[in-house]
Amino acid sequence: MTARLIYANSEGSADLYYATKFFAPDPFLYVKQSDNTTHLITSSLEIDRARRSAKVSQVHDWQDINEQYKKSNPDKELKEGVLAAFFLQNLHIDSVEVPSDFPLFLADSLRGIGIKVTPISSEFWPKRSIKTAQEIAAIEAALTITGKGMIAGIELIRSSTIADDGFLYIGSQKLTSELVRGEINAQLVRQGAQPSHTIVSGGSQGSDPHEEGTGPLPANQPIILDVFPRVEQSGYWGDMTRTVCRGTAPKRVKEAWEAVLQGQEIGFANIKDGASGKEIHQKITTHLTNKGFPTGPVAGGRQGGFFHGTGHGLGLEIHESPRIGMKDQTLKTGHVVTVEPGLYYPDMGGVRLEDVVVVEKDGCRNLTKVPKFLEI
Image (cartoon, rainbow, N blue to C red):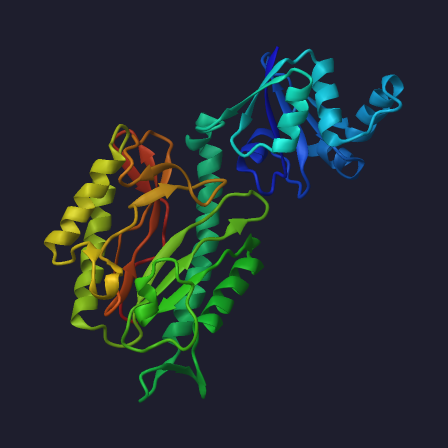
């Protein structure tokens, strides 16, 4: 008999949580037999909670398996790999498919007793990328929380004053990336979400797309706010980016912001069931180039322009299938993806806008409600 096997903690493994709907910080074993019978094996610490909430056919305690094993093998060393192999043998399983990050120690234990272990390099649960109505609602709820964090950050920037030294101040204190990030993250936590490396990146720091931002925030320069929390109860992520400027934005920044906004609209107009992610990305890249914002090396050897993908899947992982970028993937009804074109130049800073849409038969529906504006 064949089976699918996962050994991980479900707070870190989206595939495991998707299969069990059970959050646990410590690793446990999940088995799905070819007849669709499912098993979860965990410690005594989690056994009662697992029996109440895990969406599986049977829940087992490692201690019970341990006792069964010792009856016939009293002198052998007890390890989880040995017990897992013993459990699978009792189910007459001789072949398992596992995720590509499956622990090597456990794979060796299984192979040591003749169980064939085959790693799956592609998506372990392909249907996970197609979201149900319930999952879309969970993502919308995550985006609502994300939006509250975003608005909190923008409002703090709006309340700042512009000083003669070119920086923003709250009273007599310089407004920093850290202060704005703290305001955003506090709002997220109050709403039941976990912040994750929230980006508040001003001026030239914004020319690096994943720079989190440090120090005083400049006036009259772009500030990228990228907020992507995970909701603790559901496990689903939100993701949203806005670029704002406290004061008067330079002409080039205004033009870049408008070009990025138009590029995002091109994405919205072309996303639908059956669409090519690569073609959408190329259309946006061409548009930005035609607007005077080419992509390629700039002075000092750094990258400039639009040098990341247009979007990625969003769900139980912050980055999951499908992608909208240079690797061609076909969009399907039920995919939930970000649309986040951006422009980055060391002498300008960065501009990025990001919304989340659900792919539908003849188009897409934007799940993001926070408005877009540059100057505040």
